[in-house]
Amino acid sequence: MTRRILVVDDDRQMVRTLSDIVSLHGWTVDSAYSGEAAIEAVGRQDYDAVLMDVRMAGINGVEAFKAMKTIRRGIKVILMTAYSAAEIIAEAEREGALRVLAKPVVLPALFEMLDQMTQGLKPVLLVADDADFLSVLHTALEESSYAWLEVTSLSEALTALEEQAPLVVVLDQYVNGVTLGESVLAIKRVSPGVALILCEGESDNGDQKQTEPPPALIYATLHKPFPPGKLIDMLESILER
Image (cartoon, rainbow, N blue to C red):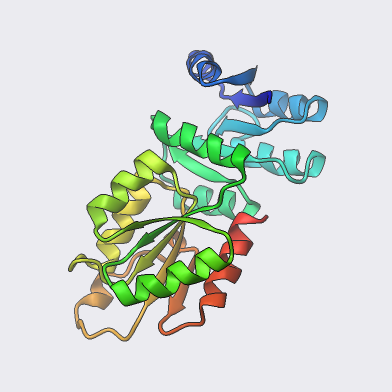
């Protein structure tokens, strides 16, 4: 099966490097050096994926993605950025970007994501150390045909983000004593565009309020106990758009 990708960046050397690497991984690669050129390319060709920088001269990556969606509604776009601007990342997520990857791009994660896209997998990373809670989530995900990864510590979660490129993280309120704010910030540093769903219960930690993460970093919050179907609905809204 031929898989075709469009690589877009106004840094021509970056385009050449990424194109060569992705080509070696079995993809047919087209190149564009501006948002405007990328939109024209999408008008001519139906791509399996678009890998595009956010910050470019002229039309930026998010604006180009919006225009691409008017041409090909189901287009799958992965954005890259060397800047951790929360508002830009949040806008890209709202518009339906598949992921926003931090530069320099971790290549194993990129290849894993591209493979998942073509295989139709829907990966979810579960981060929790409560066995009963994980069991409930497993059942819900399995019944809805979702693939998932499970880790019980923040360090394992960060490794999984780099190596497996999950599209969604479901994060329990407390994981091995690490505060919620610390966990969220660490996850977003590794994977700025991952959709993060928090699972919160009644807090018995008076200092917890002082470590709450910025709301812009959170896709949604579920308050325990919650019906598993509510999580599935959220996943559908993220992964099926």
